[in-house]
Image (cartoon, rainbow, N blue to C red):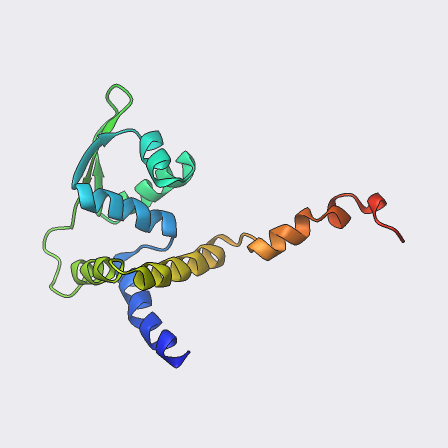
Length: 150
């Protein structure tokens, strides 16, 4: 258990330096990083990655605000999306964090660590209920109290 927490610290620092705070943002960033440039629609990226279009648009907005993604204007329902790294960044900053995270994501255990960390951040940042809480909220006793025996 101590080993896991020791590994979490640099990952948290790299994600914070990069500015990525959700699993959707990470997936969109990796998608664009691997392709460098894509002529697609928001909806197409969402379908390929398995997210709702609104989440992908929000992730693209966030990544664009961090200067990690550039988008062209919409033309015939598509845009040109390009992965970018801001010019003039000092060595050891976001680029270093990104490359370390990408290297970590090459292994299954690394991907699981990233997913676990980013899902935890998703809940903390967005205040949404956990899966267990959602299940409790959807339970028959909760949704239809007249069905339960007293």
